[in-house]
Length: 107
Image (tube, rainbow, N blue to C red; front, side, top):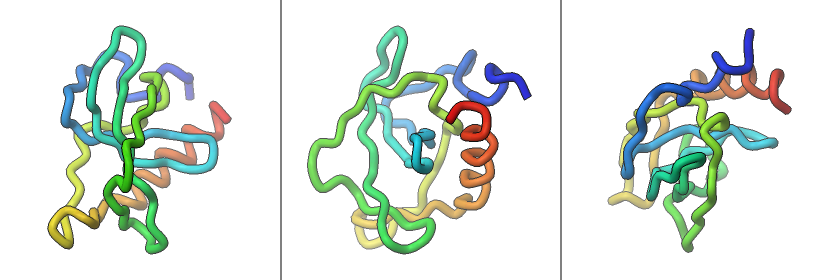
């Protein structure tokens, strides 16, 4: 598989407030786009919790610049639990498969 075809963001517009899945060296993490720059995206990322597919909201400002090629999914809609303190990603297995494919080529 060609590297360019692994990233969903090469020719797809993204918008502030949109949830995305980002590939990091150790695993994938969800994020919410705060600001869009010319070459990268600035986003707030969630912190991973202990239980599979559940993530906690930010405990502090966790803003990072993320290059487009590391965004492996966009348009993600997490299920809000506990009044926004806990988020469930029902497509966890899909995101894990995307990450596994992506990481074999890039990491």
